[in-house]
Each structure stands twice: as C-alpha cells, then as structure tokens.
Image (tube, rainbow, N blue to C red; front, side):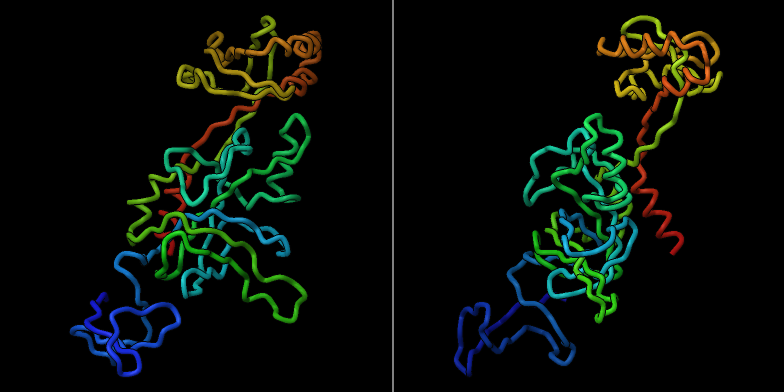
Length: 312
C-alpha cells in the first residue's frame, strides 16, 4: 500500500520537511492508522519490493567453512532479515583478472556457474589451480550471487547486503557473518523465473573425454572415443578442446566414418610433445598421454529454478 503524506507536525508545529533522526507526526490521506503496524517513508520510487536479486559479494574472512550454492543464509537487506537461497557465479577462468565493475551488472556477458564461492583453499579454486599451467591458485577479482528470498523484501537500490548463519550456536567461538555485498539488480516480478532469469546468462560447464589416436603434423591430431559413429560431427566444428598436454585446439571436422575427428592446434610448440606421444606403440599409454577434454556449456539457471518451483 502506498499513500501520499498530506501534512506533518513536529511537536505540534507544522513543518514542510523532515530528515533522518526527526520525530514527526504524519497525516496520511485516506488511511486508517489502526491498519499500520510498521512502514517506510521515502521519496517516490526510491524503494523496491523484490523477490530475488543479483548481488556482487565478498566472503568475510573470519567465517569458517565454504559458501555453497543452494545453501540458505539469513539475508539482511534494508530493514529486514529474511531467509534466502544463494547461487554463486563468476566470469570464466580466462577472465578472472578483469577489472571489477562497481555498482553495475553487465547482462550482455556470459558467466560461469560455481558450486561454491571461490576463495583460497576452496575445492573449486583448487581445481582451477590444477587446470592452470602455472600451478597457481586462480581466483576471480569479482564474484556474484543470485539471491532468492523466502518472502519479498523492501529495500533501496544499491544497498548493503549481509549474509549470515544466525542459527549457529551463539556459544561457539566462530563468526556467524558469512558474506557482504551490494544489491545490483532487484527482481520485483513474482514470476521472475520466466521473465527475468532468461536475461541472466549463467552457464554450467560440462565436459567429455576422448583420446588422441595419432599425430598428422605439427598442427593437427586425430581424436577418437568422443563421438558415436552416427553423430553429426559438423555441429561440433569450431568447438574448443583442451589436450592433457596443456594446449588448446579446435575441432576442424570429422575423419572417416567411425566417429573420429580432426583437431587443429594453433601453437606449433606442441609438436615436440606430440612427437613423443605419436612414437609410443602401446595404445593404452597413448590414450593416457593424449587425453582430450571437450567442454560444452548449457544454460542451467532457468531449468534449475523452474524445477525448484515445481517441486516446492
């Protein structure tokens, strides 16, 4: 319910304005004061009532344990604390060093779904470390979360958000505040799953494994055990793959009729290692040395929330 303020008094004296900290009596048009328990006074359109939100966030370093996607936290936003479910996401590892975007969110970009908030020692960051050729732990400079509230909350734009575990034992010597952040985009539509989530391009990486069968030249290898014989490999042409030797390649097309395919390796520096692989006669050893990883992405976000709504 939104009503216009007709007049104000401060200690029985009419006033035309009030500021934070003032105590005033307010006359509201066509409103029964008995119906009001608690409300907010604000300039028009400065507050929003939202069902979900996208926030940028940082983990509080004193909080023990991982911040897991799908976990529930006590979310303090505006003047309320409600339960909320979180889903974390970041840029792709290749873009981890990008300059953070302050107080804004780019809906044109694609983002990578995370099972948990990436921090030093987290499981996901250790996997990134293993996949990185330098062996260094890879962490993004900025991370985000999608918050889904159990009930709507009213708050200003770009407000502070605090996530905590208030159900933790108060006598335990542990920090109950888990993360803090800034609310970048609120979702006022109750049907945000259908109307808003399709705009949020969050993908979950999947991968399949194949083997290098042999080397054609310094720039090309033949792969197998990735596609079935009847698979139309043309739809995968141009898809990036990664070899266990660390190099990146691109699928150029099929090779024969048995599901084999040709991979183009732009970097010639691969030739020495692939020469070693191609000289190995043992097929089992060859398969281990020439492992191919192919990464595909599928939009998981909308399906995930839609199935949750159906199940609940």
